[in-house]
Image (cartoon, rainbow, N blue to C red; front, side, top):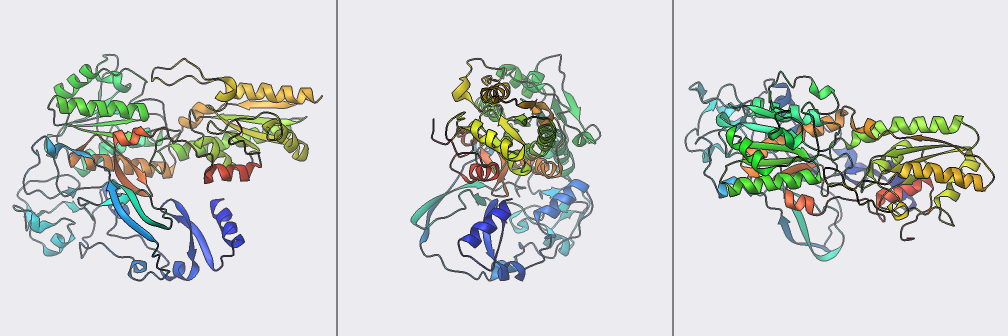
Length: 562
């Protein structure tokens, strides 16, 4: 849909001889000669994708001939127009706190950060081709300068200090501009922890989301297989309560216990809301000698994670705390998306198809209403609408609902039914507070309870048709908990694996109080305070996503009418 729309936009504006596509998560136009000149693209055997394949399968990897990063032929000569009216003044990189500021490194001197764990035995080699394959600055390592354990697999690329990913990648003509950036995530040359003495804990908090089990499994595999930790990986059951409640004893996670969990929805650790007790949590960290804590959750959970990080610093505990952002609503700022979102949108398609069948087969005036999750942001409802193409009305929290009048949704709905005989409505659970009012009640996580917008719309539609002397046959479907309990699809599963691996890389290097995510199609580390400061993210009512929804449904735009 995006490709088609932007191809039409380009042609209408008079551009020709071009193609369209997604580049760093943004739609662009590309000159066809330049696009085909470097095709077909191949997977780089020295790149991160193949490196992840080797990490996941633990298969042997043939050594590369050079540690230099491969250059795409398109980088050598990039034909185009020189833009002399764009000037970058400053690039500000977000700062991630590092444990070396407060604690001495626990890592042995002279190590090589390699895949598949550490081996400090005496079985070494001086194989020159293997040394060239190692993606570390070996000349900077004083002890093991010319040696590498035989069974180790070197990382293709180790991230250096200062490598960053630009957040503001869409540039407009200006005299001078400042850009924001985040540190690039990935394996580092220098580690802060000795993997042989690391104990780690993993906890999942809040509501369910597709991919939680993939995250738990990938964290366990990364700690054990990639870094070969000598301690235990503790799985905390039942959210924060599991740190102290005897009803939810922690479990030891091993490759065997997590072998097949990625094929299942939910979380093998179980989850809950609330239950945060700092003193009891810190006692667990102290008594189990936890060095790394991985906390999977949303906005509120991340705030709790940062409090844990601050308390560890206050108590002089050399502990790395990492968050992995989880929200099915896709409402965490700066990130391209959160894990589980695409799986939820995919699962919502079944409900929309069922609603269409019910609406089209039930007379007279068949209407199907589907309520989807979306407390303060309507991303699931909007993307499910765009992915379906069968929706006639989409209601989200960011855009006010106008029932009647020239821009009313009810007259629009009536006209659509008279034109094609039926209609489908998708509504986000948080929509309509301007009509129904905001609740003062909250749940265990402090989230306010939402008014029943789905039932309200069903009743309102029926009454509107009754006023016109007609009958509406309205079928209401609420698949909210179905879309969040499904297993992750292939794309989300790969994303969960990337999140887990990079969280482990960050903690092993000594970073703390951070989260990880995909920003402009690159994995980055983000300081938790900055991540939660602008959350929850909302759909821009003047942005491209809502514009596409209006174009797809044909509904009137009610932005600014209330």
